[in-house]
Length: 228
Image (cartoon, rainbow, N blue to C red):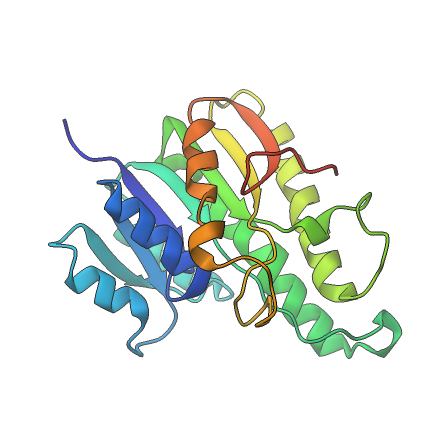
């Protein structure tokens, strides 16, 4: 029986790297994407994987690169497509946010992941899984403290776009997951965050648990439903 295949977009470091490493450990064939040509942690994982992990170059904010990668992988079948993306440009009140910064965060965190999903959906097995990395901060009802205005807005936009996607392809059997990794010690989460990457990568258990369940779910790394 051949191994399952996962495409992890944004796998050069932190959560994306942890997810790619975890699926390789579980016996999957993993295609991980990195931006540019610099060496990353994923290169170390690939070298130690015996061919189980391969690396592709992709800056998903560049549509032509998404198209080129889709063409390179045209003959592959994916059991899991997971898009990991998230930038923040500081905790700035929305009235003070420069337009260029607003556009950059929205394009990176919301538009680009959905372009990847739309481009690669036909490569995902009929009962495969499509997931994107969302955030608890994308929840409207849980926003009781404010702050991180543009980041929150970008993740809320991502959630809304995935709901539109789920409605548009309601007849498809794909499991669709918006995943919240928790507050993790990464460059984005900060050094005082309560979770390590190893703890957060329990998202893989949640992803696998919902394999084969059609429709969209908004879940955290502990497999708890996050309110919209």
